Image: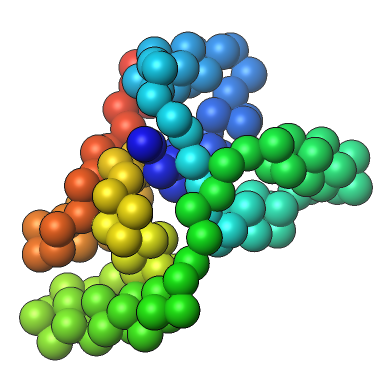
Length: 135
């Protein structure tokens, strides 16, 4: 199961040449691709106009989601707190929520956000920085 972060989806959805989409499809392969509701929220809030909002909303409505549990919020806050105590600043508490959900479900987190790489050095977070050519 591959949890795809917003940082990857933005590049995939805005790819005009198709190079990133090809690399993404190749990386995902036969794996199950999932999102969090945070990714849904971040993508929708970035819509440029009503038409893009509607297209994104329709597409995202067809995706599989890993849902937050009752403990997600407290555990994500704990991640942020513990990392800050160790001198590691995470730019977004939402990233801590996404990381926790990924760990909770045992998913590989595919991303393009250094916050996740920093977290993975100190947490049992299975992650991969998505790399592709021409970038």
